Image 1 (spheres, rainbow over the protein chains, first blue to last red):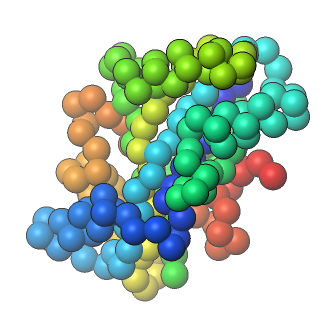
Image 2: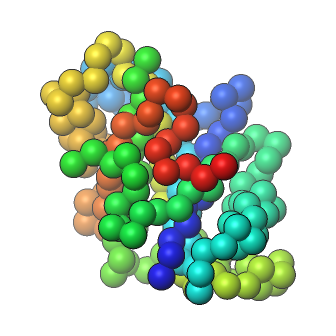
Length: 91
Length: 91
């Protein structure tokens, strides 16, 4: 069954208090070398049937109307590879 | 500046009320064809300096101790491509 991933992130110009909290906690836990953290949402959608351009366009509309707030958030729609791990995953 | 992405998702055997709420809302908004929705978190970390295996191992430790709850969540660590869009992104 094809899986589509929608990533929703706060726009760069929008304050991100959750990301700031993580960034502030890292040195206290002994981690260094991270200069910026942004926190967003990830949605994994299982699609019934074939993954056509039409279906992807529908997912894009879901992302715009339900999954994100376009005023303060950006989203990307990606298709997960059949292997079960997203392309670009390390280890 | 290299960017590392940590995706945190509820484990398959864990109930996901947020995902269920989204799944329930889709038909009311006129969308069909989605059989399952899982909602998780996405963290984008900007790294100072080079992206070595050591740094990635540190990020994995951050993911395990701070960004996720390993009892109920799985995480993946991936490196974002220099182009700025994650590999596998559609359109």
